[in-house]
Length: 432
Image 1: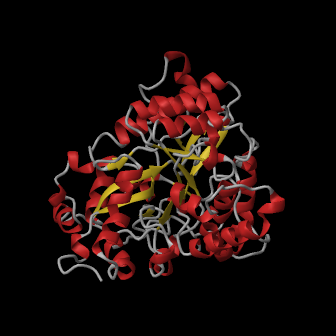
Image 2: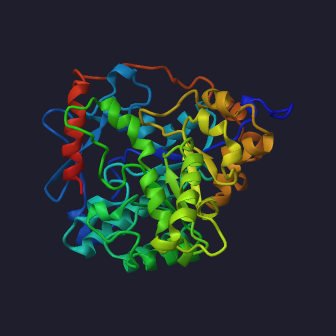
Image 3: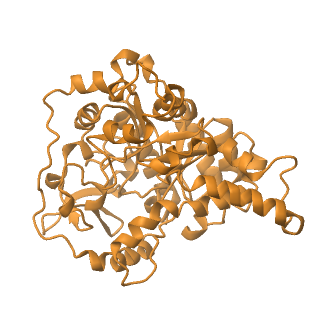
């Protein structure tokens, strides 16, 4: 059981999966003069919605990605404007206030409009322009979004994913700026590039290994959503999306990546942990029964041991997983808040997490809530924030009076849920 001193207010919480809705100034002052006019432009459209304009594309905000503070009946996929969003979605000072009110010390934030692994810029024909946009975005993310409040954020740049050598160079450049995470696709073959079973990505993997950069594969980062049928309700997609990360897990285990790069770390972001015990049982059973003819060779080890050495697992709310800690590598389990997405537990994350984690030994609680994140992402918040000021209790005391009430924001009806799966399928195809 948890130690006699620990209760929910004693938790130190570091979320390894949150999201930023990029503000209009991302590219200002961050590009060479010859590229300034080519940068994405923030605009308010005739219908009042806000969007980014880039190379003839109109990239609207998606409400499901930024619903913190809104009533659940307003969740949907319609484009929205900044005045409908909670300021913490896009304003770094307001984000920190929302973190304080939620008792969250640290946060790793994934991108929004460039897509999870920079697919938007990878589609740019002129790759010199593409690289300039990736670097400008990463500089904004590291220097401004993560740098404004020291100790509060874990930088996670986007990759120059169209070329593994260029991607490797950008990993090294951003690592020198303090970034020890990078986003990547859960299945790059879905995006039209070689799979992780090839040696195509070796320069990228090598750079990540040498620079101690953890590769974050977020659900949905293949731009391929789990659409079972055009008339399936949205509930089918939402139910299957986290569990779908099992495909990336299987790809990783049976690929040569972990054997070629023995110190690489990969995080399965927002994938949950409840499915892992059976997955580990299955890959070991399969290996022992089948490897003589499939050709797989882990030497004197089992696939489950390799998984436990290399894969960081990430969950938002997973009572089943936390009830089966004997079957998990607790040195690699990390917690997520998912602010401001619809799955987020903000602003009552500590209380919700405590229901699942409160019965664990204090050592395991601390690993899951902050120590593992510090280890795997080279994150040291206590060099900026005293540890006794990093607890749920202390952070919420700082946020006294900050409004976290639920407020209706919608200017119109939300699209009927019955049609969302079909629309999302079209979005997925268009985003590749």
